[in-house]
Image 1 (cartoon, helix red, strand yellow):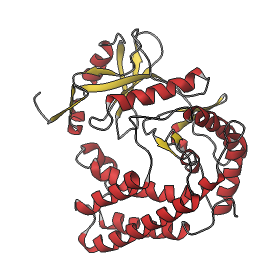
Image 2 (cartoon, one colour):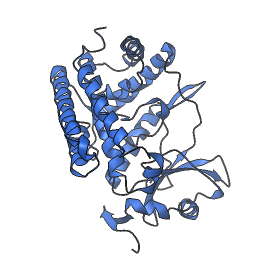
Image 3 (tube, one colour):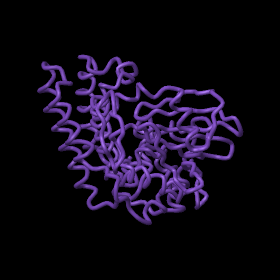
Length: 341
């Protein structure tokens, strides 16, 4: 294969991340043609940095959405596990968007070195997360998602834990020159204290369970219509504690988050039991997400799209803000859990 370096996964040669630059509109349309779906030439790039996602007008029928997976991120087996979980939810009439399957039942396809999947387009608006009735409605469906997620576990997808979301990302940042020299020691000591705080939170929570999660359940991944919510983009789905899919729907002051969590759980517990010890994990999971997010950008920094989307990354101000942010989290992790308002 000419051009960028290639990697073989599950017997298939796929391009390096830089090869997204070769994913032209013609390639996208030819990929759909290869599986019998014929676009009419209208392409709209959707907001996605990890993968490349396009809304495509079709010669017949409504538009479809095609996702071209970032090479080297997930194995074929891991992608198919996600597709399988979402299909389980569809079969139980839970409002999620599952990958389209061809006549042979395949949901993961390959063209010109790229792996891709196709989804029906589903419109909607952002949910009103300040509204208690909306939160209770979301909670009911999250309870149903988790009830299915607890039936079995992932074999090829990782678990959200301190190592993969905290220790490894922070070590990567410190070892690869992303933190400015004059802030290196401040970041090193602060992230170390933050991870100690995370460990204490997990110790206070005790042995909590792990199930198949949405994994990235913030407001932008919920499409709302008059019929209610639709949950989209399970790309970050993994094993983890149930509260991971709840805390990202919270915002505001502590008293606001207490009320919001109460509304979510009022709906959630109609369908799935919630272990209240997991409330100890909210600020710990937020801290891990902050560390992981900085490393996620760093690991993608040679993708030209990231320099355009995150021009403030790798600046002095960015890392000063990260140190302050983690110091705030260190204090928050020592506060009582949300139910102790």
